[in-house]
Image 1 (tube, helix red, strand yellow):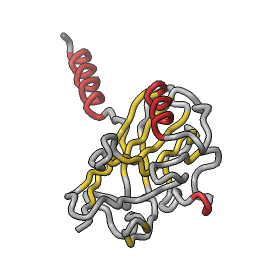
Image 2: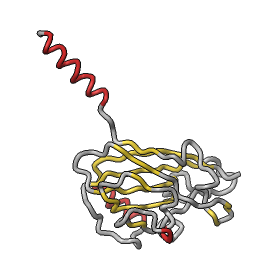
Image 3: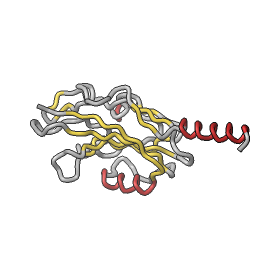
Length: 181
């Protein structure tokens, strides 16, 4: 192999190392929920403000995004859905803090927030039973191959999950925890 071939191979190898993956980040949540994200109700005294979320490097062919927050530790047998947002346009890569309050209209135009396990649309923060130990809250952004899922704000979490799984190109998640003592 000549010098040109060696240099080409090295550059190709380095570019593969620099390749970025679909990533989800938040300026509001890290390892633990704060009072800002915790639900206000069911005995919890938080502010119930949805976290800021941003994502980058979606796969080619992404036509829309969806975001969910799920607590797999909820004592229900199926977990607890805290937030479901879908039909987020492909050119949007962030949800602002508080976007889960549907009355504030901070979510991107065209995005739909459907029913959570609280029985209402929009964000419902962590509020596990007292003494149940720490619960994990899995925040996931989905890169979707369809612009619209064809669902509305009355769609239940199981139906939304079915449509998400049928149309996902890639997903990225972060996890934060909360324990109510």
